[in-house]
Image 1 (cartoon, rainbow over the protein chains, first blue to last red):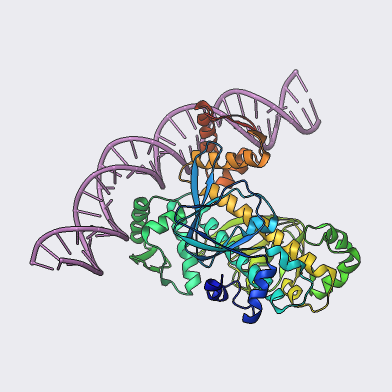
Image 2 (tube, protein in one colour):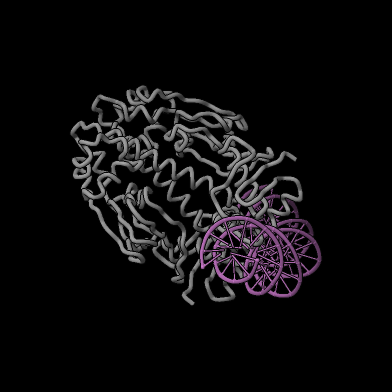
Length: 219
Length: 219
DNA sequence: TGTTGTTTGTTGGAAAACCAACACTGACTT
DNA sequence: AAGTCAGTGTTGGTTTTCCAACAAACAACA
């Protein structure tokens, strides 16, 4: 644990907890550090989740498997991100399976404990605040992606995505953080079809693009 | 306010707050009741959000408008649901515009206040718990929809959706809460194409369906 | 019973996306 | 300078979806 205390201290979640209270807090939260080797199963669907995970190191893959036993990756979580927070808070059963995409370290802790502490520590409100912020951030991210995907055509998906990037950068000129393939995955479309559509949009005067760089044009 | 105190008391969010503390709490949260008539604008994109809304009555529509000033509805919120909770918690600027789909009543309150109360009221932890649960619930709902939509074909979207319904009902036989049109909207596909695909799936032995009733079959 | 409106399934032509294959570009290596 | 490689754009045939129109099933109601 002590090897990772600095990583924990630097995480978005625990950053604002006073350093001298951190170890005490982690104990209160009944926290536990676990290590996973590449491809190891972290969690299987169907388990009741009681703890939240904070990924300290490595990357995890989330899967869903359907009635016909076919599995499908639905997300990838990197270090610094929370894991299972929704299931843990609502005390429900996972519908996701998790495996380690790389070797990984996860700090598991019981977020519900924080609400039942009677002592009046500083960390109390600070942690709750950070946790809620983290949830809100992730929630917004999901909303954003959902609204990009809630379109019927590739063209509309692209325009929706690019609009939001422009908004985010406060400018009609910006770089996107994705390669073409990553963008295609994000929007759930074919890379080549998307490339073609981007060319078409450029031809129609919506934008100018070169690699990651985009300039949106009012028509 | 007093007309709605019972509705507030019955809401998921405030249900567990002791009745005698409720008014006191609402005051602490700097809460305010607002009424909107049909089609009235509730919020416009670009505003910094400080309060969370709880819809007491009516239905609201969420819109997003893009760089080319085209608007697109992205969600509809009914009474009992939270509004702007993600923006309020993260203290960020809305990218959504909201209008009243019907006449509506919304209770606005400052959720961040709850974390800075020094007094030791019962409602303190109770409200936080309910609030976090509500966020988690909504988050999970988004995840669920996203994973249904994160497929390339209508067939895959349907199978993903139906699998989760089966899981949810603990049975391969269940009724879905959507009409065909609503299901098509949920999955962002064409209703008629979806109907055709459902027939095709039935022909291929994946399922039997009649109206809202479905039976999934292992092939 | 007949009328009406709503929901759902079906069909066919038009449009879009998929998919595989290949060409072009630029960065990096040797 | 030549070779390698990853990322991107292009193209054409195939599949899927869109879209509009219509038919069948069904519920509500006079």
